[in-house]
Amino acid sequence: MSNAIRELDTVVLTRDVPEAGLRTGDLGAVVQVYSPDAFEVEFVTAAGRTQALHVLHRDDIRPVADDDLLAIRPTGPAHGAA
Image (tube, rainbow, N blue to C red; front, side, top):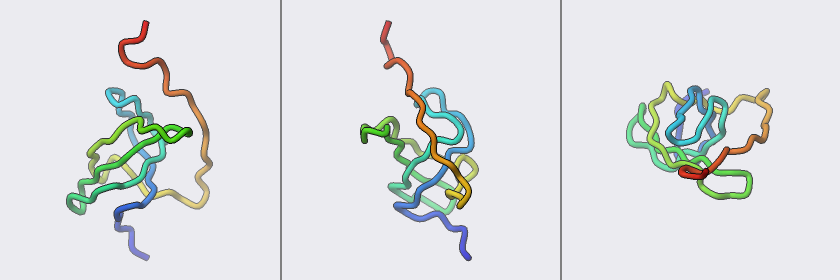
């Protein structure tokens, strides 16, 4: 079984990325593979709005596991909101 990450794979974030409003465990989709260690990943809200499009290193993401459970969390106030 290959552990290569490919375009359109669903992945899990393994660290917080606060500047993008992302937390460990957030689910994303690989939209571009730049190298075996660099990926552009899109994270969307449950309603389908893009939360972040971020280039991440292989250590920042992992494939989805069979025993992963999905959860919903609010994204918090928008940047610049009072």
